[in-house]
Length: 200
Image (cartoon, rainbow, N blue to C red; front, top):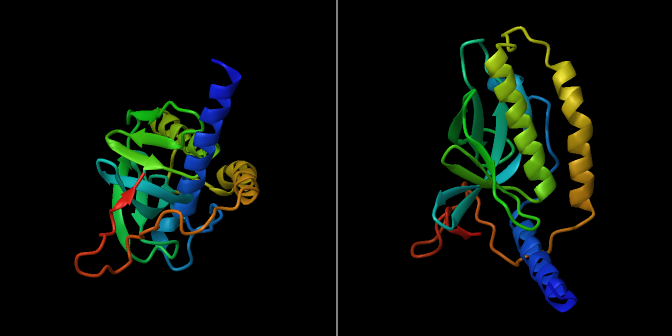
């Protein structure tokens, strides 16, 4: 590939990344439970992601990865309309043999859990989600989750990596108004775009 074409591809990818970043609200990843939300006591990590609801259509949601409460239960990725975690949108069951996949592409931030596709801000964030989900699957396979399992060590292990992700995202401030970021809790006018009409 000649240098001119390579530079052209890099420029296109950079513009596409800026467009994707512009969809996300400012946020930092969370590992501590949400006050007043009992289920979040099993939180492993939480942050915004775009969930595909139709072909080429995504909705922006707050994703909360939670460990199971019992050895024989599955884990869940719970989706909320925003970071307050008051209005649940949907949830995905994480099983020991759930199919995890990363979309191949330059700086691509897409990944899937079984038939569900999600997009995050950067490829580094995608790897962090896949790593966390894989760790959950390993624990499910080995039966190493328990209702009284101390989560402090697990959260501390993730904290350093997630702090790094937030620092990387902060170095590339997202431009505004490139793509309307329609949240799941936004009201829309008749005939206007619906909450799932985010094109990615």
